[in-house]
Image (cartoon, rainbow, N blue to C red; front, top):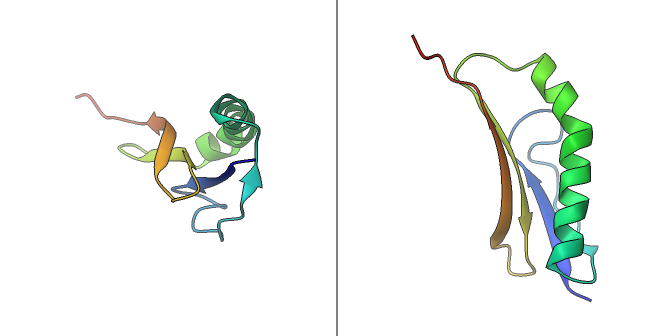
Length: 77
């Protein structure tokens, strides 16, 4: 089974040691990332500030990002 890692850019879990997670394939890794990201977003938004961003990535076994979800706050005026 392929190993994957989740990398979170900001917040409580940012910079946490990367722990390998085994998934059947990329599709299963995507589903897991969207679940983890969804669970974290409410907490992230509570502390979000103007012109900031947050992201979660799924990395493959060579630490190359294969999926990314980004949340961006922009001031438009």
